[in-house]
Every structure is written in C-alpha cells, then in structure tokens.
Image (cartoon, protein in one colour):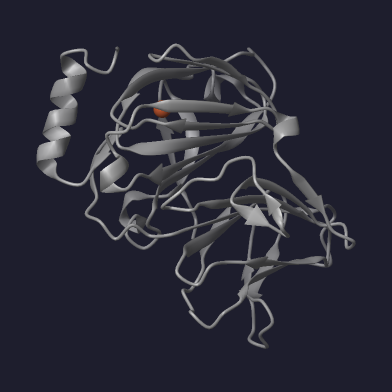
Length: 283
Ligand code: FE2
C-alpha cells in the first residue's frame, strides 16, 4: 500500500502510511507517519504543544534533530538513531520542534494503542540514545536494530506488556535475506524505505513472495501455521534496502479516535476533550 501525503503539526509534510481505515486490521497500531525532507520549509514549523490521551507514541529518528518537551517535565533531544517512547496514558501535552534550520530531517512516528485497562495510566516518557538500541549483525551482512520486542535472541531497547510490540529497523544488502519470527497471533506490517526493493514472503515456505517497492507498506497475512516472514533485498540494488518491520498483539477492543485522543467510547472522548480544556493534562 502507498501512504497518503499530508501535513500535521505546524505544516510538517509527511506520509501517513498507516491510516485510520487500517486501525482494525493492524490493531494494536493506530498510525504510522513517515517523514523525510531536505527542505527546511517542510519541517521547520515542527509540532507545537498538543495533547495526547489513551495510547503510546514511538518516534524513530533517522536523520536530523528534534527537541521534545512535555507537561510532565521531560525534555529530550531526538538525534539520528535515537528512539523516543512516550506513553500518553491519561494525558500529556508535548511539543516536538526541529533543532536545526537546514539539512535533512527523516524518521517515523508510530502510534501503539493501550488496552482499555491501561488508557488512564500515568504518562511516561523514555529517550533511547542511538547506543541504547541493540544492533544484531548477521553473517550475510544484514543488520537489525531491535527497537522493541526481541529478534535473534536479543531483547530490544523497549519491551511493553499486553500489545508486545515488535519494532525492527532492518538493513538488507542486495540479495540478502532475513527471516523474522513473528508470534502467530500478532498483526504485522513491513514498510520498505530508502531506495530498496524487497521480496516479502513466508519464511521457510515455497510460495511466491510479493515484490514491494520503496515507500510502500506490505500488510502481512495472519497465518497461524507460518513461522514468520522472509525479507529479501533485490539483487540488483545499488545500495542496501531498508525495512521497518512492526508486529503486535491485537487488543480487539473498540477504537474511538478524535485527533490526538484514542479511547474506547465516544463518552470517553468527550471526557478527554473536557479534561484537556479545563487544564487537567497540564499537571
Ligand atoms: Fe504528539
């Protein structure tokens, strides 16, 4: 699937890869935005103060610098290779502003839903510096940054209960393959980026893989008998292919979203808006 070009914050240009109509199919994931531009005018407005309630945001910085500040008192600098994992819980107000006036800014923001029982948990924030993201290097030259979950026996920078998200940033040299183990019950997708083209199929199976071009998302089938997914970079590539592989345990709960609030019912959305307007998120 191809994402939708859009803008968010104060005019930041981005591609919404995981859109609202896919939320049920890709439960517990609510959104994936990809951003990448050399033009300051595409990102300089940043994301001024705004609220969130009911889910978690994961910011994966590839290039450029952004400054995070929030109502809980956290301040952090997102730099190339770093990851920020923010649990909005019952409410947080934050800003994400570029700390550069020129040069390239690129990365992802993924939204992971919280279970009904966890939506009103205390907000939390974690900055993971580049060195805090474990990197697995395989004999065939494939490298895997284990952002969340586990891969090749290596525990990622972040592990979360209930949704058990797996987030891998994979670099595949031309013609190299990587088999990722995915729990049978998880929903999963792969986003190909950079200049790569990747064949995506079932690990250990003879079926024909699907060819996925750059800047496309592949939604993986849920086959209880499958061992996982095999990613193979096209042999003719001039440089390694990049893939963001994401999987998680679905919550199977109702989703009610109004912009930056994601709850289970409309009544809870009204409550979120009222709480925000009376300043309850600022404490
Ligand atoms: Fe935000």
